Length: 213
Length: 45
Image 1 (cartoon, rainbow over the protein chains, first blue to last red):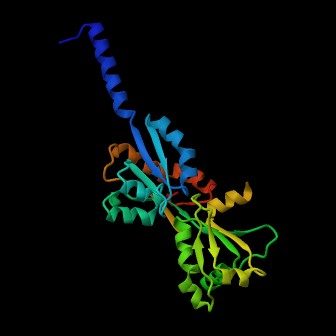
Image 2 (tube, rainbow over the protein chains, first blue to last red; image 1 turned 30 degrees about the vertical axis):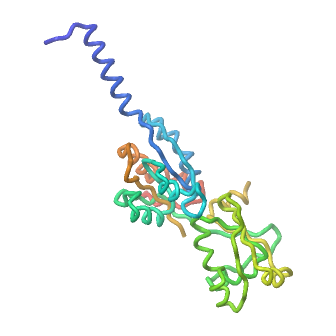
Image 3 (spheres, chains in turn cyan, yellow; image 1 turned 120 degrees about the vertical axis):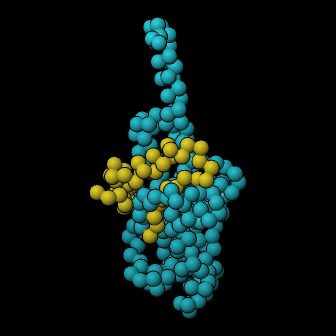
């Protein structure tokens, strides 16, 4: 049977409308800070190519803040895809929030350390030297996400005692990622007041940005 | 050292598009933007 021309035309339009409705999906993305710069640069190309709209929710990979991606998922917030620290993906998989069989590593990030211009370059050539540098610092800014989680046990009371020091570091209430400050105990402050320096640590791509900006 | 990774959630409503996004971000097409951000891409070139 052949359809009369107007009917066939309407049928074609209906098919196209259905197809465009199906392809123009909202894809909900939860993403941490470290990869966000890359994602925001590339997402317009992805949206153009597929006709999809990316709906983005940002939050740290870990840590105590309510914005942290594990906290969001635990509260029942939903997403189609998460982009964050690979170790946290595994953890979220064990808790049933994420399908680890779909995990793909996207990039590698190094942790860096900076001091104020003109300050002496800290010795971080070995784990012990890094620990000594952290313990001796007057103040340290660090993230409560991936890089800070790496650094924190290296400047805690137990590791500090291995260096025959009583330095203790505590977090301050500062919710901005990559800028949480550590507070040294009074004794440590007295000891490091003369020699200590301010140190900022964090994912290398963050530090590089803050240095070059 | 930290690896950033993408994965689907267990409740993904758009698994096809979400998978396409992860593959796109892991593809050589994304490598230049990843390098520009100070990260090391893992895609095969």
